[in-house]
Every structure is written in C-alpha cells, then in structure tokens.
Image (cartoon, rainbow, N blue to C red; front, side, top):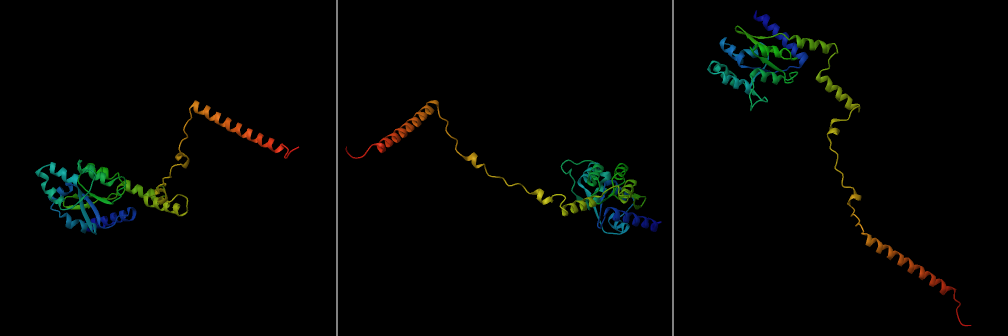
Length: 249
C-alpha cells in the first residue's frame, strides 16, 4: 500500500512539475488543522514530508494562521507550537489578521504564481483550492500524509493549453518579447522615459507694451505731424536755394 501511494505521489508531482513549473524546494503552506491532525496521529511533519514528496521542502505558514490558533485557546496550543517552528510568509493582513482559510487562499492569488502546496484538513479551504489552477493539495488520512490527485480544474486547464485554446503567462511574455524584437511594439524602456520639460516660450518672456492713454495718443500724433511738417519745409527750402541764380546781374 505504501509503494502504491508513493508511485501516485510521484505521478502527481510530475504533473505539476511539467505543466506548472514546480521546482524544489517545494513550498508548503500549512494551517492549524493540518498540524493538529499530525499531532493527533503522531506524524513528524518535518521528517516525513520530504520523504513522501521525494524532494527538498520548505514548510511555512502565515501570521494570520498563528493568530487564529492563539484565539482558539489551549486546545490547539500544540498545533501552534509546531507551526511556530516553520517559516513565516508575509501576507497582506499583518495589522488586521483575517481567518486562516481566507489568508491562505489570498496567498495563492488567481494562478498560484509562487507555486505553493496547501496542507489542510479544512473542507471549505479544500473546495476553494480545487477551483484554482495548479495548486497541489495535502491532507492526512489516519496516520499518513496524502497528496491529492490534480483537481478537475487543473486537468481541464492543461488540456485546454495542449489544444491551443489557452495561452499561458510564459507564452504571453515570449510573444511580447518577439513583438518588441520585430519592432511591432515600442520597447518598454522607451515607454518608461519621461519627456523633458521644455523651457518657456521666448515670446512669452517679452515685456508687455505699456498701453497709452487717449491724451498720450493725441500728443504722439501731434509730434508725428510736426516732424513731418518740419521735414516738408526743409525740403522746400532746399529746392528754392538750388533753383536761385548765382552771382550778380
């Protein structure tokens, strides 16, 4: 029975490695229900998990999970002690903790980009996890750790990719890179450049002409007429002097 369970686990891990790019060390998010079940069934998580998954693992949890165990009292004190030995992953609820199941679900996002395993006995969390593509699920049956088979959601997603109906995130990045190399789209670095701030318009820097009052305009017109009259008289005088005969009779 143990050999059969090991083979099934190996097959499931290969599915996630090949289709969702899982790599060692496997990151496993645990909640209080899983640790409580391990404590009850005398399972050494730190020792048995790497053997069962046949690879290096990183056991981790979140602050929300620890806060929830604290609020539940002495009955789950043992589970809290176990979880405190593992790594704490940063979640977005440090100041305002939320229920553990909601926190772990938020860590997965829409497509589990950090490649987390989820280890839980919570049925509601299990149902929610199965609706997200590419999330391996661990639970305890009696005194053994079990890696669940890939969910129908994950299997359907992989089949859609193989049929060419879905473009993966990695493929989208490759397509974007090819477009940039071919010059079909502007390079992201060019988009990031800010336009230099131009200086002020030189014409706007010119001093504004002072507006003349009606009296000043009248005086200016009179000055122009006088200057024109003087020029006219000077020209006529010069003409008379030129026309007059020189010498005596």
